[in-house]
View 1 (spheres, rainbow, N blue to C red):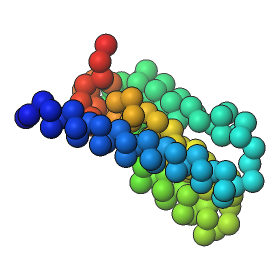
View 2: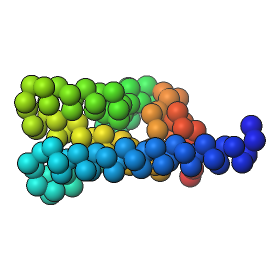
View 3: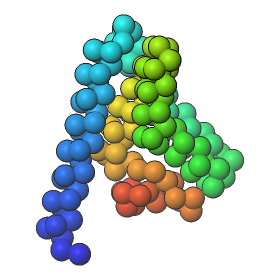
View 4: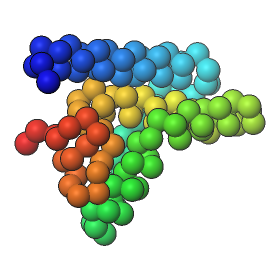
Length: 125
């Protein structure tokens, strides 16, 4: 693959994730009545899923991917919105922001062979 194209594609993906992160932060402010300290408190909560790696890499990757899957986060936002359960919508928004933030730094969904093997490539040491 052309290295220049690869750098260009990586930049586009990072800009896309930055837009999703920024949109999530704005949506939290506009669509919820929660304080920003709640956002800060819950922002890194999905990373508790790392603990599943203590069991083994297969279960660890499955649990990590569940808590970092954007489809699940969008589902939570929609369920919270339509069911009028603001807490569920807020959690979906915060977790979507977290997942986008992670992906800006190369932390993608995990393959079961190694924590550092992600759908975005290998995480640098």
